[in-house]
Length: 102
Ligand SMILES: [Zn+2]
Image (cartoon, rainbow, N blue to C red):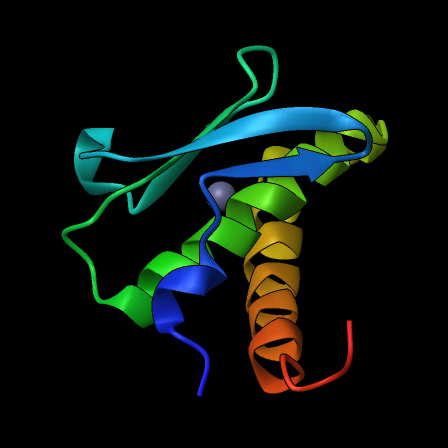
């Protein structure tokens, strides 16, 4: 079995840019935050670990939408819906397929 701690890396490369992943309290009861210009993702440790993993991928999707320019053609609500749906999908895809050979 793979340790669940391995599901959230301390840094992640997204479209060629390295982002620091910090496990810290987030503002306004959010479970995560991302700052593309600062190359930073924050995950709040006060949530269940499964939620933290989904939040990590949610923030990764937000950054991908911004880095690809897709966020410019989406409303704020649509951007959030994409991040929510695809973040959960990506978290489940990766956690369900860790057994695949790398
Ligand atoms: Zn979001």
